[in-house]
Length: 197
Length: 83
Image (tube, rainbow over all chains, first blue to last red):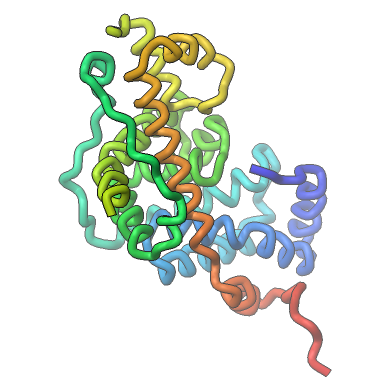
């Protein structure tokens, strides 16, 4: 993730002193990232806006307590993830029954496998296709979804992801592996169907 | 080609690591000779890419940041002053 750390440290220092312009700038700098995080976590724009608003309300309230032991973006992401997960817990779970397994590497190594047909990325512009993607990612239990979002969509490092989620780096890697494999398996039929259209 | 346990474990690690990280070199070398593994990793990479592109298509509506700043009672750096 691209962040100008020295510049951001100055901004955060000013914000901690109550500088309203610095607080505004932090909101502007992070609103899109937090919105997208909320959108992927919750699956809808209204909840994404709620997560965004609550995250920055907490920032205003607690930025004075931010000690700079981690970077600001790790801190604000942790706040947003916690807000998002709390919101998800308050709603009925649609896909509790889905279990996530490790990839079957025995099968990978022995079965004959076929490559995916050539995928036309323009298909992603189609809202209906994106809704299929949303549906698949919503099936991932939150503990896997959050790692996939932070590592693969927001391109955070394993270390930052594990700090944000307060899990070990090894655990973050295992969750990521399972999430990627789950989505690949589910996406397989969708990609093949699109290629046949 | 059947993979040994050591390589299976490393692929497991690989699938949770940065796809271009240095420890993946051995696995990549192996995959040069293992079509199945190559296909598997290509599909994982493509899965990630599809989701990344889809994420970029979902733009945050323009008014969201403005509304947020107003809700937080912060000045909007992009708003011009009313005369």
